Image (cartoon, rainbow, N blue to C red; front, top):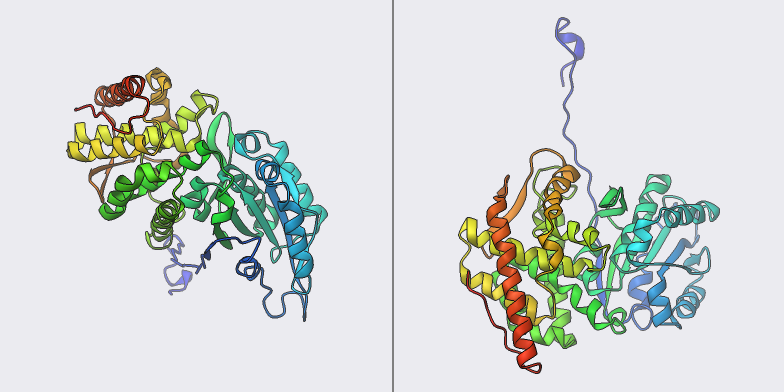
Length: 414
C-alpha cells in the first residue's frame, strides 16, 4: 500500500476490500426438546477462556405465546432440560412468553421488553438468546438481540412451516414501522437454527399450509426437480403427510441456505433480491388487509401474480403458469384476494424500491430456474395478470360449489 504522502498534491484515499467469515449452523431434528435435546444444547458452547474454566453458557429463552398455549407442558419441559444440563448451560431467567404474529412486530413495547430483560440479566456478546416461535417472533426477538451490545448470539427454533422453509435461516431481523413491513431492522447471521418436526405437530391447518408458498417460490427460482416434487405432492402436503411435507421443507430451506451462504449477496448490497420473488405485492397485501392475510398466503398470491406476469411479458411458458396455480391451489393456498384490485397495491412497488434503495429491481422468471431482473413494471400487463388469477380463483370457487369433494383443479388459460 502506498503512503498517503507519496503524492502530496493528490487527495488522500484508501479503498480496501475485506471479508469476514461467518458460520451458519442448521440442524434438523425430530424432537429437540425431547430425545434430540443434545443436538440443540450443543449449540450453546463456550470457547476456551470466554468465561474462565468450566463456566456454563448463559442462555435466555423467549417463547411464542401461541406455542405456549397449544403446548402447555413446553415451558416446564424446557426449564427441566436446562436444569439437568446446568453444568454446561445456565438458564438466566424463567422462560419468557410473549406474543407472536404481527402483534410483536407492530408494537414497539415488546422490543423494549426484550431489551430490558437482556439488560436485567446482564447478557453479553457471548451469551445466547434462544427464540422459539414463528417468523414474526424470530424477526422481533432477533432484532432486539442484534441491537443489544451490537449483537448477542441468537439460536432460532422456528415453529411454523413458513419459518422452517424460509426465514428461519435468513440473516434479516425486523419489525414493522410507519405501517410498512420490516421497515426497521438489521442484518445478523444467526448462531444456529434448529428445524424441529415436533414443533409442527400442533400447528393449525391454515398455518401449516402457509409455509409451502415459500417452497414453491424458491423452487421456481432455482430447481425444476424441486418444483416437480411440490407439484406432484401438493395435495399430500395439504393433507399433512409428514414424510412429504418434511422433504418439501428440507428442499426449500437448503435452497434458501445455499443462496444466503453462496449467492454472493447475503446482506443485500446489490439491487436485486431474487428470494423476494412475488413479495412486492405480498407485503402490500398484508398491510392493505390489516394482516387478515397471513404472510405465506400473501406470498402465494404474489407468486401467482408474478408468474402470470412473467408469462405475459417475459415469455414464461403457459404450462409453468398452469402448474404453479394448480400447485398452490392444491396445497390449499390462495392465489387471489380482492385487495389486489385496489390502486394502492402498486404503492408496493415504490415501497419495495425504497426498502433497498436505488433503481427498482424485481425478479421475474423466463423458465423454472431462470430468473431475470427487471427495472420497470407494465401496469397494464400487471392488471391483466391480476385479472387472470382472479378468474382462476373464481373457477376454483365455482368448481368447489358444484362438487365440494372434488380434488380437481380447473385451469384458466391466458
